[in-house]
Image (cartoon, rainbow, N blue to C red; front, side, top):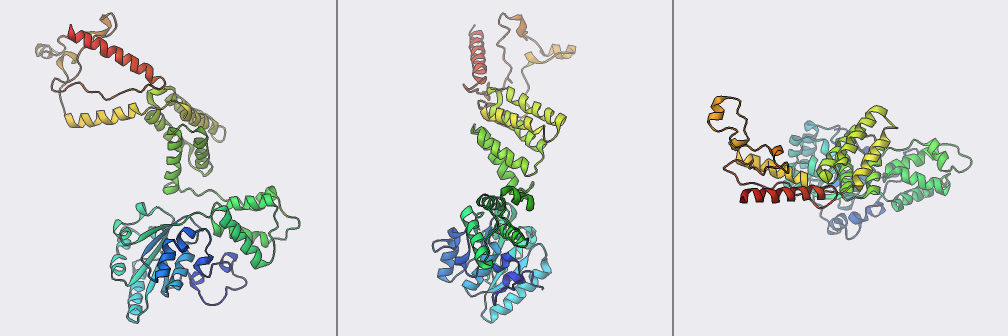
Length: 438
């Protein structure tokens, strides 16, 4: 099988002078890896494995450009294992069979194989299962790399045989170190002002590979005076935030928005709303989430929250982007600052369970309509009290099936408008008790 990672796997000699900057700066030892000291340091999981000389199967989970491939290659060097890389994007079952057969041959000669699988989450369930026997009998030590949450994308059987190690997005200090190394390697300072340098770091969004590619672009252009932040922005295309609409990044930001709203933090809620919309999410999806929030987490504590969210949807339909997005902001801020109650949401869940548990109990006959003689004859509608005929507009009648005791599903809080609802319910409960006593 062709080596899909020839440049990554090469461990002898120096990269060619015309190789990409990211390749020329690729770490030669684990200690050169930046931003992942929690794993590669002496007390980290990888550091301990290397010190012990024994490597277990692992899954490297982290954002793009954080060093997953590099760490896997250096791991093989550190524990003297044969490095066999494949990509789940380009490989199939036939390729895996060849890899496993070659690993068995090398094992007979006393050579251990580190099988590195890039984008391992792209293998389907059956393909993932094919790794199990070869990992269990030690034919290969598996190192998988993924940008997606392994809990969702990998088989439980495979996860039980591998340790998941989380790589962090590179922080400003790690990215700055990469810039220093690039300047030292080329012998040239970056043609940027201090503000533009900071802007360049921010644009990388924690992706070291992206940062070095941008640096290479800067070095390839004849720039006279150092660029300021505006000049840099005009020269380089701005990197879009990482946000897959059907992947974990999507759910993480939506969860963060929802929790910030629930926690009544309008500033954080507005930040996550901006993250979501500037990354390209459909505004109508966000509006659906806000409408749901208004019912689930505010409810009758402020009935206007639902009205605000639906009005924002109408406003966005009418105005479109970007004008209509201000209505979304207004709905977001209204929800964040409204009194909170999940009493309606809790009542719904409890009532639904009660309905399932009680089956098809007949309502009491007094509240059933009797459009035929037969129905009147068997008692339908008999004794019904018309509430508007009473002085308080309240009869206090029984509305529960005879085989069922009255239940309490909805318990309003003392927050916002719901406090008034609680007062009304208490008033009706008192009247109902008086009616029954009399």
